[in-house]
Image (cartoon, rainbow, N blue to C red; front, side, top):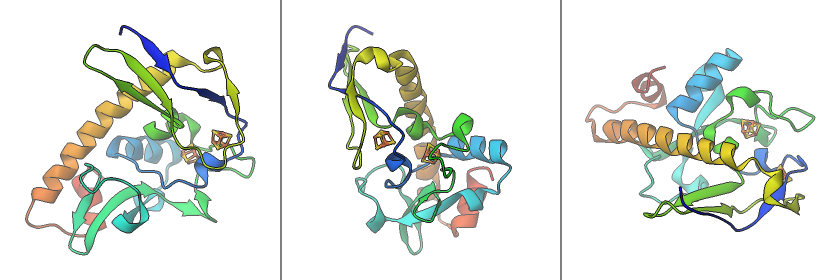
Length: 180
Ligand code: SF4
Ligand code: SF4
């Protein structure tokens, strides 16, 4: 890793926006950790949201083909916020939270020369204040980002296999296909 370039960092004041506004996509590894940690059934943790509900490229590897159209596996919401967000706006599944929750609101890009660029994603009505790099654990962020990339690739391969198979079923069949 040669150089780290930052665009901007924020000091989160836990307004809860990140766990309320976005639709949160998950992988089989995220679901595995959440089921184990919470003891909740997989289908009570995730739902399958239609293409029209998420701003992801149509060629993203997360789109699962069903007979009734493309859907993505995402965290369920209750009262318009993530099912794991507590009334105090913390995460009740923090230790097992999805990889994307670990890196949000940043995205980490590495080029061919192994330069690392960390960018701030769109954050929804964010109340956070700008902060210095020293307020952010950059090594943890980079490690989480690497894990996220690996687990996304593994999941997208599974989805690709499902999408290519001829006897596709419904969401329960998909969950079984990915190990639940
Ligand atoms: S919107 Fe900003 S302040 Fe609110 S939880 Fe997200 S990062 Fe933190
Ligand atoms: S799993 Fe936790 S961190 Fe992720 S959106 Fe839900 S409450 Fe927020």
